[in-house]
Figure: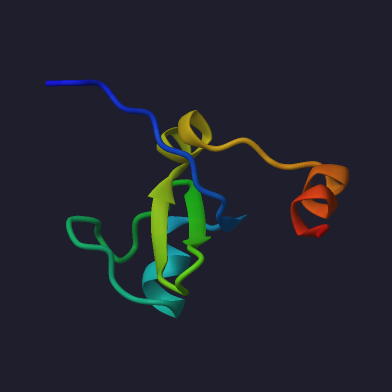
Length: 74
């Protein structure tokens, strides 16, 4: 198999598993009262999911205000 690396820009905010399960939807395999640290993630197509903190922070880095502005300039 060949190794691949992908990139995507997402919107995210810190949110524990219990809050996500209570306010968005249950997380398969995670107890509804679990307080695991993580992030609520919204993708470009509007899909919303929850990601454990260690997984999210391994895959994503925050953009600076200047980097965000550059992405939206024509």
